[in-house]
Image (tube, rainbow, N blue to C red):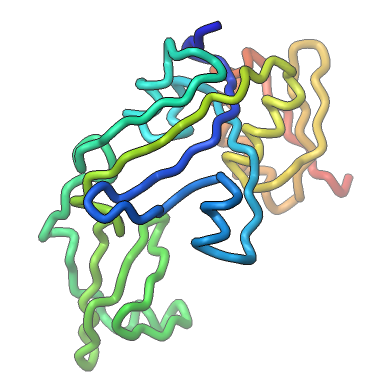
Length: 211
Protein backbone atom coordinates (compact mmCIF):
# COMPACT_ATOMS: atom_id res chain seq x y z
CA UNK A 1 0.00 0.00 0.00
CA UNK A 2 1.30 3.46 -0.93
CA UNK A 3 0.71 6.75 0.79
CA UNK A 4 -1.35 9.54 -0.74
CA UNK A 5 -1.80 13.25 -0.06
CA UNK A 6 -4.16 13.84 2.91
CA UNK A 7 -3.34 10.42 4.44
CA UNK A 8 -2.51 10.41 8.13
CA UNK A 9 0.56 8.27 8.74
CA UNK A 10 2.71 7.32 11.72
CA UNK A 11 6.46 7.40 11.26
CA UNK A 12 9.72 6.90 13.13
CA UNK A 13 12.46 9.29 12.11
CA UNK A 14 16.04 10.28 12.84
CA UNK A 15 17.31 13.67 11.68
CA UNK A 16 21.10 14.10 11.44
CA UNK A 17 23.51 16.87 10.50
CA UNK A 18 25.08 15.40 7.40
CA UNK A 19 28.75 16.36 7.85
CA UNK A 20 29.01 15.34 11.52
CA UNK A 21 26.38 12.63 11.78
CA UNK A 22 25.04 14.25 14.97
CA UNK A 23 21.37 13.56 15.68
CA UNK A 24 19.35 16.76 16.17
CA UNK A 25 15.81 15.39 16.20
CA UNK A 26 14.22 11.96 16.53
CA UNK A 27 11.32 10.02 17.99
CA UNK A 28 13.27 6.74 18.14
CA UNK A 29 13.67 5.84 21.81
CA UNK A 30 17.32 4.73 21.82
CA UNK A 31 18.45 7.78 19.84
CA UNK A 32 16.33 10.17 21.90
CA UNK A 33 17.90 8.94 25.13
CA UNK A 34 21.31 9.98 23.78
CA UNK A 35 20.03 13.54 23.39
CA UNK A 36 18.13 13.63 26.67
CA UNK A 37 18.08 10.66 29.08
CA UNK A 38 14.86 12.00 30.63
CA UNK A 39 12.97 12.34 27.35
CA UNK A 40 10.25 9.91 26.31
CA UNK A 41 9.63 9.05 22.68
CA UNK A 42 6.18 9.90 21.33
CA UNK A 43 4.45 8.58 18.22
CA UNK A 44 4.53 11.09 15.37
CA UNK A 45 1.28 11.06 13.41
CA UNK A 46 0.60 13.68 10.76
CA UNK A 47 -1.36 14.39 7.60
CA UNK A 48 0.59 14.38 4.34
CA UNK A 49 0.41 17.61 2.37
CA UNK A 50 -0.57 19.89 5.25
CA UNK A 51 2.77 21.33 6.38
CA UNK A 52 2.99 19.26 9.54
CA UNK A 53 6.55 18.20 8.65
CA UNK A 54 9.31 19.84 6.62
CA UNK A 55 7.89 20.57 3.16
CA UNK A 56 10.61 18.56 1.40
CA UNK A 57 9.96 15.53 3.61
CA UNK A 58 6.22 15.91 3.24
CA UNK A 59 6.53 15.84 -0.55
CA UNK A 60 9.02 12.96 -0.45
CA UNK A 61 6.74 10.73 1.62
CA UNK A 62 3.77 10.96 -0.75
CA UNK A 63 3.58 7.81 -2.87
CA UNK A 64 5.87 5.74 -0.63
CA UNK A 65 5.23 2.22 0.63
CA UNK A 66 3.79 1.67 4.12
CA UNK A 67 6.21 -0.38 6.26
CA UNK A 68 9.35 0.56 4.35
CA UNK A 69 12.39 2.60 5.45
CA UNK A 70 13.75 5.54 3.49
CA UNK A 71 16.73 7.88 3.60
CA UNK A 72 16.83 11.39 2.17
CA UNK A 73 19.46 14.14 2.14
CA UNK A 74 18.36 17.78 2.19
CA UNK A 75 20.27 20.89 1.18
CA UNK A 76 19.98 23.93 3.47
CA UNK A 77 17.46 25.44 1.05
CA UNK A 78 15.24 22.36 1.39
CA UNK A 79 15.80 22.00 5.14
CA UNK A 80 16.14 24.98 7.49
CA UNK A 81 17.31 27.66 5.08
CA UNK A 82 20.58 29.41 4.41
CA UNK A 83 22.28 31.49 7.09
CA UNK A 84 21.53 35.15 6.43
CA UNK A 85 23.58 38.06 7.72
CA UNK A 86 20.46 40.23 7.91
CA UNK A 87 19.03 37.82 10.50
CA UNK A 88 21.75 38.94 12.93
CA UNK A 89 20.36 42.07 14.57
CA UNK A 90 20.89 44.42 17.48
CA UNK A 91 18.04 44.34 19.99
CA UNK A 92 17.80 47.06 22.67
CA UNK A 93 18.31 45.78 26.21
CA UNK A 94 14.97 47.32 27.22
CA UNK A 95 13.16 44.73 25.08
CA UNK A 96 14.61 41.97 27.26
CA UNK A 97 13.92 43.92 30.42
CA UNK A 98 10.29 44.52 29.48
CA UNK A 99 9.87 40.76 29.01
CA UNK A 100 11.75 39.95 32.22
CA UNK A 101 14.52 38.15 30.34
CA UNK A 102 18.20 38.07 31.25
CA UNK A 103 20.30 38.10 28.07
CA UNK A 104 23.77 36.54 28.13
CA UNK A 105 25.97 35.08 25.35
CA UNK A 106 24.62 31.69 24.28
CA UNK A 107 21.15 32.18 25.73
CA UNK A 108 18.27 31.23 23.41
CA UNK A 109 14.91 32.97 23.57
CA UNK A 110 11.66 32.92 21.62
CA UNK A 111 10.64 36.16 19.90
CA UNK A 112 7.21 35.96 18.26
CA UNK A 113 7.71 32.30 17.45
CA UNK A 114 11.28 32.73 16.20
CA UNK A 115 14.29 31.23 17.94
CA UNK A 116 16.87 33.88 18.83
CA UNK A 117 20.38 33.24 20.16
CA UNK A 118 22.26 35.95 22.02
CA UNK A 119 25.75 36.41 20.52
CA UNK A 120 27.06 39.27 22.65
CA UNK A 121 26.00 41.80 25.27
CA UNK A 122 27.46 45.29 25.16
CA UNK A 123 25.70 47.70 27.51
CA UNK A 124 22.28 48.46 26.08
CA UNK A 125 23.00 46.72 22.76
CA UNK A 126 22.35 42.99 22.49
CA UNK A 127 23.54 41.20 19.33
CA UNK A 128 21.03 38.48 18.49
CA UNK A 129 21.05 35.78 15.80
CA UNK A 130 17.56 35.03 14.44
CA UNK A 131 18.77 32.34 12.02
CA UNK A 132 17.40 28.87 12.67
CA UNK A 133 19.98 26.89 14.71
CA UNK A 134 20.38 24.53 11.73
CA UNK A 135 20.40 27.21 9.04
CA UNK A 136 23.12 26.58 6.46
CA UNK A 137 23.40 22.89 7.37
CA UNK A 138 22.88 19.92 5.07
CA UNK A 139 20.83 17.34 6.91
CA UNK A 140 19.72 13.76 6.36
CA UNK A 141 16.70 11.86 7.57
CA UNK A 142 16.09 8.17 8.13
CA UNK A 143 12.34 7.53 8.07
CA UNK A 144 10.27 4.40 8.57
CA UNK A 145 6.58 4.58 7.66
CA UNK A 146 4.97 2.47 10.36
CA UNK A 147 1.31 2.57 9.34
CA UNK A 148 -1.54 4.50 7.84
CA UNK A 149 -3.84 5.96 10.51
CA UNK A 150 -7.47 5.56 9.45
CA UNK A 151 -9.41 6.12 12.68
CA UNK A 152 -10.84 9.65 12.76
CA UNK A 153 -10.53 9.90 16.53
CA UNK A 154 -6.81 9.16 16.40
CA UNK A 155 -6.32 11.61 13.53
CA UNK A 156 -8.04 14.41 15.43
CA UNK A 157 -6.05 13.77 18.61
CA UNK A 158 -2.81 13.90 16.60
CA UNK A 159 -3.86 17.12 14.87
CA UNK A 160 -4.83 18.77 18.17
CA UNK A 161 -1.47 17.80 19.64
CA UNK A 162 0.37 19.18 16.61
CA UNK A 163 -1.37 22.57 16.76
CA UNK A 164 -1.77 23.10 20.50
CA UNK A 165 0.32 20.45 22.32
CA UNK A 166 -2.81 19.57 24.29
CA UNK A 167 -5.27 16.69 24.40
CA UNK A 168 -8.74 18.29 24.20
CA UNK A 169 -11.97 16.42 24.76
CA UNK A 170 -13.98 16.34 21.55
CA UNK A 171 -16.79 14.67 19.66
CA UNK A 172 -17.82 14.41 16.03
CA UNK A 173 -21.52 15.00 15.45
CA UNK A 174 -23.57 15.94 12.38
CA UNK A 175 -20.50 16.85 10.30
CA UNK A 176 -19.22 19.02 13.14
CA UNK A 177 -16.13 18.65 15.28
CA UNK A 178 -16.87 19.94 18.77
CA UNK A 179 -13.73 20.78 20.75
CA UNK A 180 -13.83 21.50 24.46
CA UNK A 181 -10.92 23.82 25.27
CA UNK A 182 -9.85 25.99 28.20
CA UNK A 183 -11.84 29.24 28.22
CA UNK A 184 -8.75 31.38 27.66
CA UNK A 185 -7.87 29.41 24.49
CA UNK A 186 -11.28 29.58 22.79
CA UNK A 187 -10.61 32.56 20.49
CA UNK A 188 -7.16 31.27 19.54
CA UNK A 189 -8.42 27.79 18.62
CA UNK A 190 -11.21 29.30 16.52
CA UNK A 191 -8.54 30.81 14.24
CA UNK A 192 -7.96 27.30 12.88
CA UNK A 193 -11.53 26.64 11.72
CA UNK A 194 -10.56 26.70 8.05
CA UNK A 195 -7.66 24.29 8.65
CA UNK A 196 -9.89 21.75 10.39
CA UNK A 197 -12.36 22.05 7.50
CA UNK A 198 -9.55 21.51 4.99
CA UNK A 199 -8.10 18.46 6.74
CA UNK A 200 -11.23 16.74 8.05
CA UNK A 201 -14.13 18.22 6.09
CA UNK A 202 -15.77 19.10 9.42
CA UNK A 203 -17.10 22.40 10.77
CA UNK A 204 -15.27 23.31 13.97
CA UNK A 205 -17.30 24.27 17.03
CA UNK A 206 -15.22 25.46 19.99
CA UNK A 207 -16.72 25.32 23.47
CA UNK A 208 -15.14 26.41 26.77
CA UNK A 209 -14.35 23.28 28.74
CA UNK A 210 -15.44 24.81 32.04
CA UNK A 211 -19.02 25.52 30.89
